[in-house]
Image 1 (cartoon, rainbow, N blue to C red):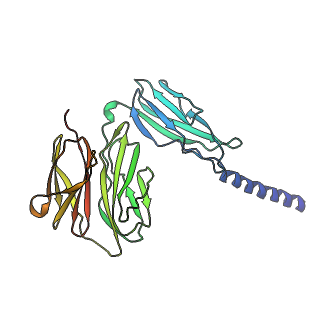
Image 2: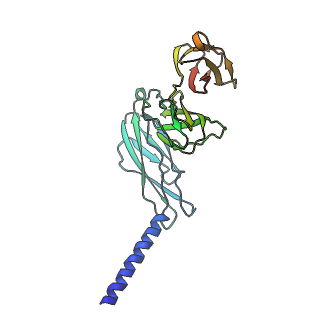
Image 3: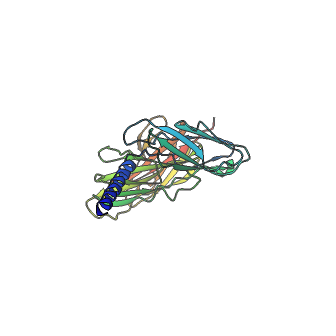
Amino acid sequence: MRCLCLILALCLVACGDGGDLIANRMPQAFAGFDRAVAQGSSVQLDGSRSYDPDGNGLEYRWYLVSAPEGVTLENPTNVQATLSSSDTFQGTITVALEVSDGPVISWPDWVAVSFVSATSLARPTALAGANRHLRTGEPLILDAGESAGLIDQYRWTHLLSPAQDRRAIDDGVTALLSDLEAGLHIFGLSVRAGDQWSTMDCVSISISNEVRQDPFPDIRIEAQTSDSVTLIANAVGQLSWALISSPDGQSNQLDGQGDNGTRLEYRSETNGTHLFAATLSNGLSDWVAVELENSP
């Protein structure tokens, strides 16, 4: 009897180890990020970020967790499927994705798609957070949680780094970066709701070995027309202004006005996003993106 129990125990342990091994080699489904779209429209679901640890090819299976009237799912066995709604349907649909490498099927991953009225899809607002100081070696957490709108995509861009080794950052409401070199880093955030992207918002991060508390300049838009903008920066000390980029590829130093050069008037005949910087003599800088839309 003791031998039989020992054999059974060894079998259970072996099965348990085998179960862990199978779980570790299981393909992983990724159905994408939740989003909001206008009712009556179609949205493409993308499972291309699913993967298999063994590098095997994958088969895809999309399916509706619930199937209300007015909603259809096309190409459910392709890497990309299409979800559509009727003109009258409003609500949130959950779609599941499973992937298989042949012998093993993944756990399902879910994505929620909200069909809302077109008027609810107002242009979103990106908020990248406050400019701040960090000590060398301290990790940086970027947080877009204060952004406004029915947001279904958050895009971070590393615009400036001291040695121009800008990091690639995955889409997401937050991002964690470590081992950033000392100096000034600028990050831009753009968010998308449906088919509309926000104007970019920028955040400045100064990294040094010392504990710094000196304030950053703070730019705000005083006035804007279709082809001009007036910027004001709160700052202690002399400011220098620069056009970092524009749709026609121009970048150059600009002349500020008033006390310490804290006021900038700018006019352009080129439509699109213009990126400006206001910089103090100590190297601290604030950046702002402005979209100019000249009338035809």
